[in-house]
Amino acid sequence: MPEIVTIETPALGDRSYLVHDGAAAVVVDPQRDIGRVLAVAQAHGVRITHVLETHIHNDYVTGGLALAGETDAAYVVAASEEVGFERMGVRDNDQIAAGSLTVTVVHTPGHTPGHLSYVLGEAGQRPVAVFTGGSMLYGAVGRTDLVSPQQTEQLTRAQYRSVNRLAAELPDEVAVYPTHGFGSFCSATPTSGTSSTIGAERRVNVALRGDESAFVKELIAGLNAYPRYYAHMGPANRRGPRAAGLERPAQADPAELRRRVDAGEWVVDLRERRAFARAHVAGTISFELGDAFSTYLGWTIPWGTALTLIGDSPEQVAEAQLQLTRIGIDEIAGAAAGPVEALGGELSSYRVTDFGGLAAEWGRPGQVVLDVRRSDEWQQGHLPRAVHVPFWEVEQRAGEVPDGEVWVHCASGFRAAIGASIMHRAGRQVVHVDDTWEMAARAGLPVVP
Image (cartoon, rainbow, N blue to C red):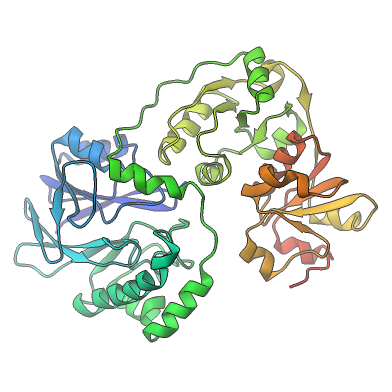
């Protein structure tokens, strides 16, 4: 029986897989930091013979080409894709042999036109698993609007047919292993659970509950905003990205930090958002390091802007750098670490409260409430008189926010910290509402649809 090892990347909501028979192994959709994959292969004493891509990814820079080069493995990519590197091009119904493993290629367009799924078995045996990439997810499907608006409806129809094909052709007991759907914005709708089978998906998957027209209408209507950095991932993956370079950034002393801030560059503070609010180098921006870090920084920063990182420790800076290489941000202009007081220069601060604090001062003169959530969140309910500017647009639209003290909120406090720090950087007096959206109504605030 093949062993399947899951390699999770919570920061992007994705999973990669290493599958082996005790000697030979195949890898599906590896992230760019291939050291994790190599460590798993070494721990199991197996040789990687094939690296499989389900599709040209839009949410991260692949490690596939680098891993194949490092291990002398065949790099398997859909033959229909135009790419700038040598690969083993495969088509629907092709078979790949790796030791005792057999992998059957299934063309499952929808998430992308050339999308493939890979059905795993052993010679002469029934299939045991299918790697579905951004096709069949747990209760959901991959989004269909990442290629172009003109192709969205066509791809949505293809997604419906692809998921239905998998459900029709594979036995109930086949385990489903998607790449997306664990918090990834590549999922068209929320996913559920951490494991599934074809039989389970027949009962719950959104593409298997009704007819094609209803599915297309419902899916397209529900598509919401996705990270702006996605626009750069497909082209990078078609060129054939090199392995991540993780050289330590040049250290920035206090004078250099101030020069970068004054030049309008992004100097990002990785510390906990309330610690940032209490004291930070004036002009820096808060992006608390955690699972959401790279997605939201990549979404917000103007692509190509010089970036400097500040952290509590060199290890914190190194972790941020690693996460950023997964989305193609390789050039870190500088870094500094240590207590904020030791970084030199002018320090600044602003208030932090919760929705109860906002309710206590609701409607007082000069108060401006800034909601930085996505448009779909705003439409589901918001505060009257609030100004809506999605967090990734705050820097460009700061001048649209009326005069007054700006109370910034989102749905959890994380994005509000980004927005508050950017508004503060623009010279505004701010209050960071660090609370969950559910608490707004409980605090007595007048939420309206």
